[in-house]
Image 1 (spheres, helix red, strand yellow):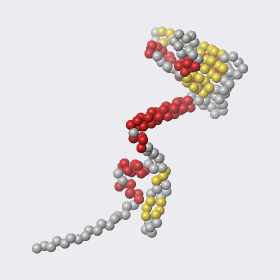
Image 2: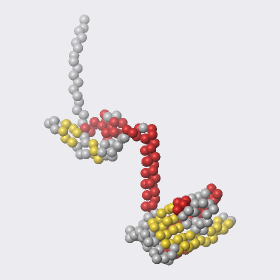
Image 3: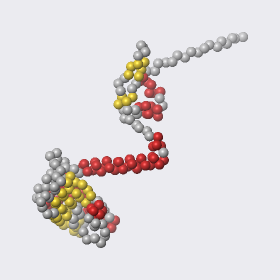
Image 4: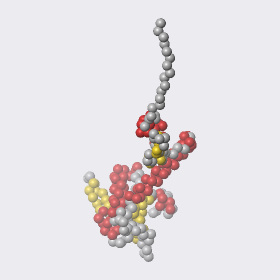
Length: 228
Protein backbone atom coordinates (compact mmCIF):
# COMPACT_ATOMS: atom_id res chain seq x y z
CA UNK A 1 0.00 0.00 0.00
CA UNK A 2 1.34 3.30 -1.05
CA UNK A 3 1.89 5.98 1.55
CA UNK A 4 0.97 9.65 1.10
CA UNK A 5 2.99 12.39 2.74
CA UNK A 6 1.71 15.94 3.27
CA UNK A 7 4.34 18.56 2.71
CA UNK A 8 4.06 22.26 3.60
CA UNK A 9 4.17 24.46 0.56
CA UNK A 10 5.91 27.74 1.23
CA UNK A 11 5.30 30.55 -1.25
CA UNK A 12 7.87 33.30 -1.17
CA UNK A 13 6.60 36.77 -2.14
CA UNK A 14 8.07 37.86 -5.41
CA UNK A 15 9.53 41.35 -5.70
CA UNK A 16 7.49 43.54 -8.00
CA UNK A 17 9.43 46.37 -9.63
CA UNK A 18 7.83 49.79 -9.28
CA UNK A 19 7.50 50.13 -13.02
CA UNK A 20 5.33 47.00 -13.18
CA UNK A 21 3.17 47.88 -10.18
CA UNK A 22 0.60 49.86 -12.14
CA UNK A 23 0.00 46.97 -14.53
CA UNK A 24 -1.50 44.98 -11.63
CA UNK A 25 -3.95 47.72 -10.65
CA UNK A 26 -7.38 47.58 -12.28
CA UNK A 27 -8.03 50.44 -14.76
CA UNK A 28 -10.43 52.44 -12.51
CA UNK A 29 -7.98 52.42 -9.60
CA UNK A 30 -5.04 53.09 -11.87
CA UNK A 31 -6.82 56.17 -13.29
CA UNK A 32 -7.61 57.48 -9.83
CA UNK A 33 -4.03 57.05 -8.68
CA UNK A 34 -2.57 58.72 -11.75
CA UNK A 35 -4.89 61.69 -11.41
CA UNK A 36 -3.20 63.10 -8.31
CA UNK A 37 -1.46 66.45 -8.52
CA UNK A 38 1.92 65.02 -7.52
CA UNK A 39 2.37 61.25 -7.39
CA UNK A 40 5.64 59.74 -6.19
CA UNK A 41 6.72 56.16 -6.94
CA UNK A 42 8.67 54.52 -4.14
CA UNK A 43 10.81 51.39 -4.31
CA UNK A 44 12.76 49.53 -1.66
CA UNK A 45 16.46 49.18 -2.25
CA UNK A 46 18.57 46.30 -1.05
CA UNK A 47 19.69 48.28 1.99
CA UNK A 48 16.15 49.00 3.12
CA UNK A 49 16.32 52.67 2.17
CA UNK A 50 13.28 54.08 0.43
CA UNK A 51 14.16 55.95 -2.72
CA UNK A 52 11.71 58.33 -4.36
CA UNK A 53 11.67 58.79 -8.07
CA UNK A 54 11.07 62.24 -9.58
CA UNK A 55 7.62 63.71 -9.04
CA UNK A 56 5.15 63.19 -11.83
CA UNK A 57 3.20 66.38 -12.41
CA UNK A 58 -0.22 65.21 -13.48
CA UNK A 59 -3.57 67.00 -13.68
CA UNK A 60 -5.54 67.02 -10.45
CA UNK A 61 -9.08 65.74 -10.19
CA UNK A 62 -11.19 67.08 -7.34
CA UNK A 63 -14.29 65.13 -6.45
CA UNK A 64 -16.97 66.71 -4.29
CA UNK A 65 -19.39 64.21 -2.69
CA UNK A 66 -22.22 66.67 -3.32
CA UNK A 67 -21.62 66.34 -7.05
CA UNK A 68 -23.24 62.93 -6.90
CA UNK A 69 -26.49 64.43 -5.65
CA UNK A 70 -29.24 64.94 -8.20
CA UNK A 71 -30.01 68.57 -7.43
CA UNK A 72 -26.42 69.59 -6.81
CA UNK A 73 -25.27 67.97 -10.03
CA UNK A 74 -27.82 69.87 -12.13
CA UNK A 75 -26.95 73.16 -10.43
CA UNK A 76 -23.26 72.64 -11.07
CA UNK A 77 -23.98 71.70 -14.68
CA UNK A 78 -25.87 74.96 -15.15
CA UNK A 79 -23.03 76.87 -13.52
CA UNK A 80 -20.52 75.16 -15.78
CA UNK A 81 -22.54 76.11 -18.87
CA UNK A 82 -22.65 79.75 -17.75
CA UNK A 83 -18.89 79.77 -17.29
CA UNK A 84 -18.43 78.16 -20.70
CA UNK A 85 -20.68 80.74 -22.36
CA UNK A 86 -18.76 83.57 -20.67
CA UNK A 87 -15.46 82.12 -21.89
CA UNK A 88 -16.79 81.77 -25.42
CA UNK A 89 -17.94 85.38 -25.40
CA UNK A 90 -14.55 86.56 -24.13
CA UNK A 91 -12.83 84.61 -26.89
CA UNK A 92 -15.19 86.13 -29.46
CA UNK A 93 -14.56 89.69 -28.26
CA UNK A 94 -10.83 89.05 -28.24
CA UNK A 95 -11.04 87.91 -31.86
CA UNK A 96 -12.81 91.19 -32.70
CA UNK A 97 -10.32 93.41 -30.86
CA UNK A 98 -7.77 95.75 -32.40
CA UNK A 99 -5.13 93.62 -34.19
CA UNK A 100 -2.38 96.25 -33.94
CA UNK A 101 -0.03 96.40 -30.96
CA UNK A 102 0.29 100.18 -31.05
CA UNK A 103 -3.47 100.64 -30.83
CA UNK A 104 -4.64 102.25 -27.60
CA UNK A 105 -8.31 102.37 -26.57
CA UNK A 106 -9.74 105.89 -26.60
CA UNK A 107 -12.75 106.54 -24.38
CA UNK A 108 -13.28 109.94 -26.01
CA UNK A 109 -14.18 108.43 -29.38
CA UNK A 110 -17.07 106.03 -30.02
CA UNK A 111 -18.27 104.41 -33.24
CA UNK A 112 -21.81 103.08 -33.60
CA UNK A 113 -23.00 100.99 -36.55
CA UNK A 114 -26.34 99.73 -37.79
CA UNK A 115 -25.09 97.11 -40.29
CA UNK A 116 -28.22 96.87 -42.43
CA UNK A 117 -28.10 98.19 -45.98
CA UNK A 118 -30.47 100.94 -44.85
CA UNK A 119 -28.48 101.46 -41.64
CA UNK A 120 -26.06 104.17 -40.61
CA UNK A 121 -22.70 105.03 -39.08
CA UNK A 122 -22.50 107.26 -35.98
CA UNK A 123 -19.35 109.01 -34.77
CA UNK A 124 -18.90 110.54 -31.32
CA UNK A 125 -15.70 112.53 -30.84
CA UNK A 126 -14.47 115.06 -28.28
CA UNK A 127 -15.78 118.63 -28.47
CA UNK A 128 -18.02 117.86 -31.44
CA UNK A 129 -21.68 117.15 -31.94
CA UNK A 130 -22.65 113.57 -32.81
CA UNK A 131 -22.42 112.83 -36.52
CA UNK A 132 -24.60 110.27 -38.31
CA UNK A 133 -24.15 109.10 -41.90
CA UNK A 134 -26.21 106.72 -44.00
CA UNK A 135 -24.36 103.54 -44.91
CA UNK A 136 -22.90 103.78 -48.43
CA UNK A 137 -24.58 101.32 -50.75
CA UNK A 138 -25.04 100.57 -54.44
CA UNK A 139 -27.38 98.56 -56.63
CA UNK A 140 -26.38 95.13 -57.91
CA UNK A 141 -28.05 92.49 -60.04
CA UNK A 142 -29.30 89.46 -58.12
CA UNK A 143 -30.88 86.86 -60.38
CA UNK A 144 -33.46 88.70 -62.48
CA UNK A 145 -33.85 91.53 -60.02
CA UNK A 146 -31.88 94.47 -58.66
CA UNK A 147 -31.01 94.79 -54.98
CA UNK A 148 -29.03 97.13 -52.79
CA UNK A 149 -25.74 96.03 -51.27
CA UNK A 150 -23.27 97.82 -49.00
CA UNK A 151 -20.37 99.55 -50.76
CA UNK A 152 -17.28 98.27 -48.92
CA UNK A 153 -14.78 100.67 -50.50
CA UNK A 154 -16.94 103.73 -49.80
CA UNK A 155 -17.39 102.61 -46.18
CA UNK A 156 -13.61 102.42 -45.74
CA UNK A 157 -13.11 105.89 -47.22
CA UNK A 158 -15.88 107.31 -45.02
CA UNK A 159 -14.37 105.95 -41.81
CA UNK A 160 -10.84 106.99 -42.74
CA UNK A 161 -12.01 110.57 -43.34
CA UNK A 162 -12.71 111.00 -39.60
CA UNK A 163 -9.17 110.05 -38.52
CA UNK A 164 -10.50 107.96 -35.64
CA UNK A 165 -7.68 106.80 -33.30
CA UNK A 166 -6.55 103.20 -33.69
CA UNK A 167 -7.99 101.04 -30.91
CA UNK A 168 -11.29 102.94 -30.61
CA UNK A 169 -14.27 100.78 -29.66
CA UNK A 170 -16.93 100.30 -32.33
CA UNK A 171 -20.36 99.09 -31.21
CA UNK A 172 -22.32 97.23 -33.87
CA UNK A 173 -25.90 96.07 -33.68
CA UNK A 174 -25.97 92.29 -33.60
CA UNK A 175 -27.69 90.84 -36.64
CA UNK A 176 -30.80 88.82 -35.76
CA UNK A 177 -32.80 87.25 -38.61
CA UNK A 178 -36.59 87.13 -38.39
CA UNK A 179 -38.80 84.52 -40.09
CA UNK A 180 -40.74 87.16 -42.03
CA UNK A 181 -37.53 88.51 -43.61
CA UNK A 182 -37.18 85.56 -45.97
CA UNK A 183 -34.02 84.08 -47.44
CA UNK A 184 -32.88 87.29 -49.10
CA UNK A 185 -33.35 89.20 -45.85
CA UNK A 186 -31.34 86.63 -43.91
CA UNK A 187 -28.56 86.68 -46.49
CA UNK A 188 -28.46 90.47 -46.65
CA UNK A 189 -28.42 90.85 -42.87
CA UNK A 190 -25.56 88.39 -42.46
CA UNK A 191 -23.64 89.93 -45.35
CA UNK A 192 -23.84 93.45 -43.91
CA UNK A 193 -23.02 92.30 -40.37
CA UNK A 194 -19.94 90.38 -41.46
CA UNK A 195 -18.80 93.08 -43.87
CA UNK A 196 -18.89 95.81 -41.21
CA UNK A 197 -17.05 93.64 -38.67
CA UNK A 198 -14.32 92.81 -41.17
CA UNK A 199 -13.84 96.46 -42.16
CA UNK A 200 -13.77 97.76 -38.59
CA UNK A 201 -11.29 95.17 -37.31
CA UNK A 202 -9.06 95.58 -40.38
CA UNK A 203 -8.95 99.35 -39.80
CA UNK A 204 -7.77 98.80 -36.22
CA UNK A 205 -10.92 99.13 -34.11
CA UNK A 206 -12.22 96.86 -31.35
CA UNK A 207 -15.71 95.66 -32.24
CA UNK A 208 -18.38 94.91 -29.63
CA UNK A 209 -21.66 93.38 -30.90
CA UNK A 210 -24.75 94.67 -29.06
CA UNK A 211 -28.20 93.02 -29.25
CA UNK A 212 -30.80 95.42 -30.60
CA UNK A 213 -33.14 94.77 -27.67
CA UNK A 214 -30.44 95.95 -25.26
CA UNK A 215 -29.92 99.43 -26.66
CA UNK A 216 -33.61 99.85 -27.45
CA UNK A 217 -34.53 99.20 -23.81
CA UNK A 218 -31.85 101.66 -22.69
CA UNK A 219 -33.35 104.44 -24.82
CA UNK A 220 -36.95 103.28 -24.21
CA UNK A 221 -37.47 102.36 -27.86
CA UNK A 222 -38.52 98.75 -27.35
CA UNK A 223 -42.18 99.23 -28.34
CA UNK A 224 -43.32 98.34 -31.84
CA UNK A 225 -45.05 101.71 -32.28
CA UNK A 226 -41.97 103.70 -31.33
CA UNK A 227 -40.39 105.84 -34.03
CA UNK A 228 -36.62 105.41 -33.83
